[in-house]
Length: 283
Image 1: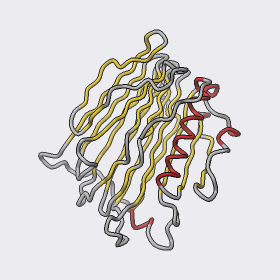
Image 2: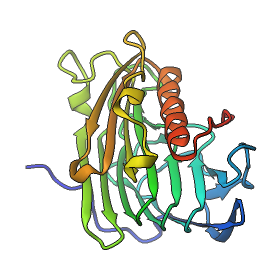
Image 3: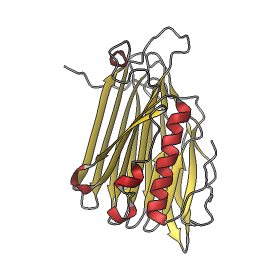
Image 4: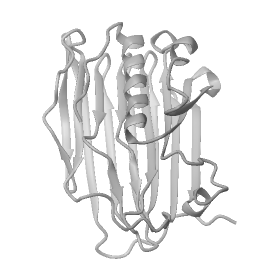
């Protein structure tokens, strides 16, 4: 029987909080309430898209060098009616050896009517012994759109084929009344991805995306079908339950190929929601 990652929390365990509220004023989105504690760091907001003044980009950073054992990092993102945000990172996040005490990340998202949020962090890089639990809970009002990206890669700095310990990722997406639209759970041990029997084979990065919301603001199946190149990525597209939107799963040859899929999907989401192509985001 699979044992859960949750364990009693020892005294002195590190915690951090990231809170961000975005609101629409005229044609533009602005930052309202914000609270950021160590190890989180937030850059100033960027308005990259002249043709989409309502779309604001924020880079969420960490000043700690990655995730460590028993980290407890909580985020909350609120996007007001008609506002639009893109929250991403500048680089991948290393998950270090957790020595049997997993790092925990929780994210709460609330989108009001007509809001847009793309939450697209770069992949987690799972070092030997890494263990991480991620929980995302989102609530969408009518007309809102949410793009979620969740990706990971395996890496042994010493090249000895050692594996991470365990990864859990759980996502619940509900409508404004609290009705469950989509639930997605991933639980996997590193040993199951090693050796000749690995379900990911020689692919280096595993990505999972959800694109949820108002159907008239989402890409079509034909538009999504152009994602990926067989020699660099394998992409599967699924219609999510309750007509909620699209699920996109991808295996990529390397970090560059994985980023290409993430950027292409972000661009498709923006075009479908706003009718304009977004500018490239620098990383």
